[in-house]
Image (tube, rainbow, N blue to C red):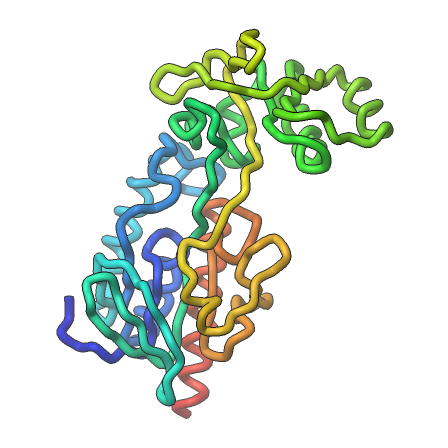
Length: 302
């Protein structure tokens, strides 16, 4: 870690989006600090998919290669720490970390991802990212043609049902409460032989994260090998909100098509600013954020 406390850019979050932004900035000779806790949200996922050249690699393999490549750019520094406070100052921004370090930068990029709020169902968190999954594009191919559940209700369940129905003919929706579907939706589900079970779930039986059975509160059980779950999330850090960045109705950091937030000089990329949760999208938006930050700095210095 460099002794320098003043940087052109601080990137909070050093996974795919943050590293992508850092590479773009490093290649532009920008003085950059990446602050990262080393705990990515997909660390439990066994394999990453739907990302060209890296399909089937573990998340750790991809991020390790990415970090090694970014480390080749000597204007980029890394700090394993957690950013806990931030504020605007006349020269840009000030960030304080958990260990008490203080840094300043002209620009900020938040690549902090989101924190999934797990169901209280026993076994749910053990299976998350392994056999209880969120995305048919990231995980669906590996769980095709097996007995599959969707743990969701109403519009959220109906949104993902056609995508999962494309991957398996054995699909059941588990509402975990009283069902909340319109009559037209129920007719379409029936047309595609998609059953709906209204019982509350008490447990997911699994072996090392691989789903075996779903147990309901009435004591009955149903065999499943995969389940899609649409669960709420929260931002990993409150710093952008404290500085004044707006959120969308869904809870993402609001950005424009260039990854600029509603606060001048602050950009966001990856899962924290989009519902499109994938490694490919995180890398793409990180690249854009890095390029736009460099453009702003270049224009200001020209």
